[in-house]
Length: 288
Length: 318
Figure 1 (cartoon, rainbow over the protein chains, first blue to last red):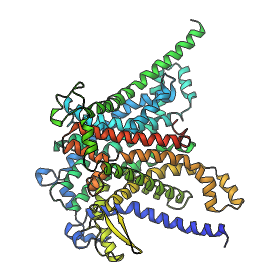
Figure 2: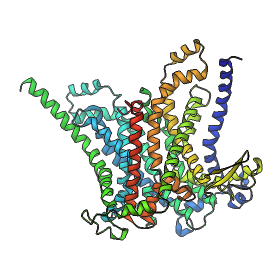
Figure 3: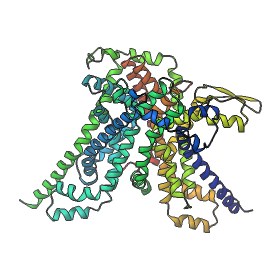
Figure 4: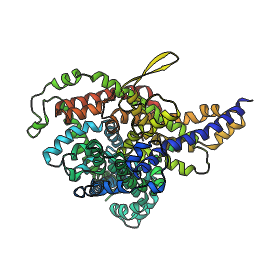
């Protein structure tokens, strides 16, 4: 057999093996999470290797326990979901308020130091979050902001601003200057052009970016752990779940139900906007 | 007003507007990133414990004792080694998997969009949730991996993936020590971040002009040759940039390791040590010093990277 024929057949077959392997590796843990969340814990201990259980054995008690308020004997995740949503929404709003003008300036206007802005963002990424954690912990304790969700949202902006400016700038640079020039000729000031012309055109990018920021804030763990751990009422879902697992003995199936509750909002949001998100992130990567 | 002054004022106005619009961004970065970093440097040279922080000031006595504490504490050097192994291992694995995935998904097939979406899940899902699923799957008592391993693969006893520091594995009469827990967290890292590499690499492969490869096929190039001479040169700069990004991220990683092992069993990466200094020993000074050491080591690695690979990464920034 020739080299070409051999390689074509080899890689042709390998490709399907790889695809199947990747599909199992990425999906199985999520399937397993769902499966365990509806199994009674005694059954898990008896038969840990089961890949499927009949509907008759399903239980929703795990979800009830994880969501029920604490004083009703549950784990109170519903209240924590609200906290997570509040922090994440606040982060989205604050980030966009800061980065919309910033991204506009970087993509459209010539100003002193424009070329250096990306160096600043590089610096943000180079320094470990843990390096920021200590002084922010100290500063927020002194300001009395440490236990507050708003304080946490402010810290999150630091994590989201660079990627947000990067995504928005990429999108804004695809909007032709001519459109803005036309608006200027029609008598719009710079601010009017920005608000009435550019921003409506950039709406898909703003939405995608908002979702991405929401995801980062929703999934964050380190700062939530450092800042909120003392007061249970302020916990985010991620933190609550982590505390649940390290605290008193809670059945693993309940923990899995909590993980499902934590994951579902993000997965739903992600698939609602998948195309916009992936394009927003990687546009620029394909320009060589 | 003459035309020359008009042009200049327009330019000046643009400059002023630009600075005005970018200033909120700069203020935020200054307040939550730059100042804290500078303050870490100060704190690292002061003896401050958590109970003193209400009184701590910029002009407290400066000392090198935090650094002697940190550098002399047991396990400092091995922890640094663990961090490097973890960062390099996680980077190679996630990039390797991402590359394989991008190549496998290059050509259209039925269900490609679905699979592509599914493969992003590990990256998108909350770290707490996925860390717990892994913990449950790998558990020696009720984990499915050990259950299947013993029933189908003939393992003699369950493997404690997350709590076993080292096990000896015999192969052809050789006793090979394997750092089980460290390998497990590296695999987790590769699993969680390969979608990130995959996404960027796939976008790049799709931008490779069709004609190039068609011409190579006509010329009788085998798939490996086409990869070596056409695809690889296009992907190499992206890979170099991704390698740097992932290395930096992994080097500073805290939550994945903390959630899986708590930093035990030979997985005490430097970030977890910073956290321990802060929350277990309430030693703000030592925590800052440890964080600073981490940043300095990282900068050294980056300097080496930029010296040797900068041309490859060039032009990606703008």
